Image 1 (cartoon, rainbow, N blue to C red):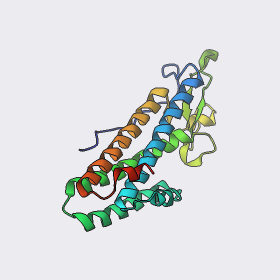
Image 2 (image 1 turned 45 degrees about the vertical axis):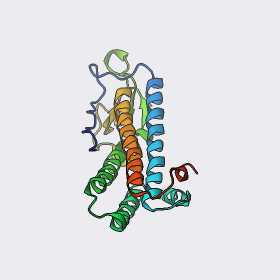
Image 3 (image 1 turned 120 degrees about the vertical axis):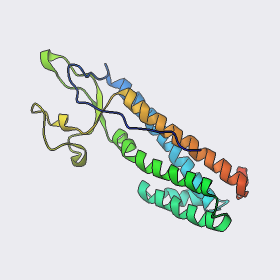
Length: 203
């Protein structure tokens, strides 16, 4: 089952015509939900690693979780996938491709998860003393996430992304789709190859 097509949202600078949220709470709520969905995804990917490693013990998940780099964990999943299908059925292109597609989508989503996790809710003054409304944007110290130039003397307006709560929910929906696909793959692969007792995923 291919993952649905997905595109990042377009983000524009705050302006008189591009207003943010009326209060920061809407941003905070959306951030909390998105990051919670991401952690659910990470937890299920650990279980996928357990399955591909053919380990009846939760120790595989704990070892996987000791690796802090998400990129490295993705490579661990790839290595486990390669050995697993070599042992069982190297011609199972449907599931091999599905696992790789999930890993690639996870890697692509990482930058948006990081934007959300390391952003801050803020508003800016506009002409006439009005506020732009609240957006989630990168902080000014985050060198890799700000542009070199400033706008109207305000350094923070060099941020590379500006998310409303709807933008954050868009990414949360994507994280949720990846979570669902990871859960589906665990069920499909385990049912086909009878590697682990389903109860072993609960211990």
